[in-house]
Image (cartoon, rainbow, N blue to C red):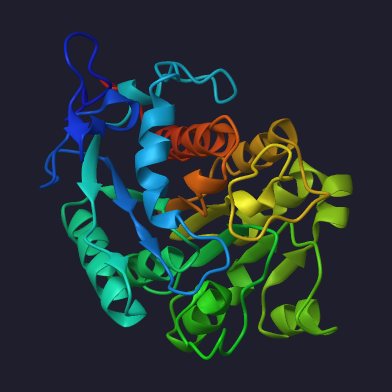
Length: 316
C-alpha cells in the first residue's frame, strides 16, 4: 500500500508533544507500511556528555523544515515508492543497558515482523546493537556499513560490556554481522591502542579511515556496497562529521567531513540491500543552532530514500 507520506494539510500528527518525523502518519502498530521511523531515546549512564535520549525529539523537530517529496540527489520521489510512518519511541530510557537493549530490540523486531524496514533515531551508539539484534533475528548475519569517527571494538568501556564503545565487539560475539561483507568508514582521532585499526581488520572488517576516505570518495563507498551483498544495515553516527557541522555529539573529533562531503558519501550507498538502519549520537544539549539535529534529520530522510530506491514506483 503506497501513499503513506507527509501530511499535507491540517495539524501534523504528534509524538510525545512534537510533530512526527517529516509529518508522517503516527502509527505505533505498523501496518501496511514499507518503512517505519522509530525513536530510540537511550543514553548510557556516566557519559561525559549527556542528553542523547533527547535526540529523537530534536530530530523530529528539525525535520519539519525539510521538503521531502523529491530527492534531487537520488532523482526520485520516495513516497511514490514506499509507504512510511512514524512509529513513535521505543521505551528505552536510561539505566541498565541490558534492559534498554531488550526494549529497543523488541520494538524494532515488531517493525520487522510487520514487514517494514525500521529506521532508528538515536540515542547514543549503543542503540545500533539493538537495531542489529532485531534485524539479524529476521535476516541472519548482516552486512554492516558503519560511518563514524570511532571503531567501538572495546571488550569493555568503563567496566561495562554493553556501552557505545563496545557495539562492534558485541555484534561480532553475538554473530549479528558478517565482517567480511562489512565496512567501517571515516575513523579518525586518538585511539585506545596503537593496533585499534589492525584489530578491526583482523576481525574481518574493511576499514577506511577518514584520511583515506577523503581521497577515495564515493568509490570506496561503492566498493563497500558491492561487498555487502544480501541483507544490510546502515548506521551513521553524527561524530562522522566534523564538529563544525555537527557539534552536538558525545565525542566530537575535529578534522572530519563537512556536511556536503559526508552526505555525498552516505548517498553513495544506493543499491545497498537495506533491511534496517539508524542515525545516532544527537545530543541537543550540546548542539549549536540545531545544526546536528538538522543534519541528522536529513540523513534519516536519505536512508528512507535509499530504501525507496530499491523499490518500484507505484503502479509499475
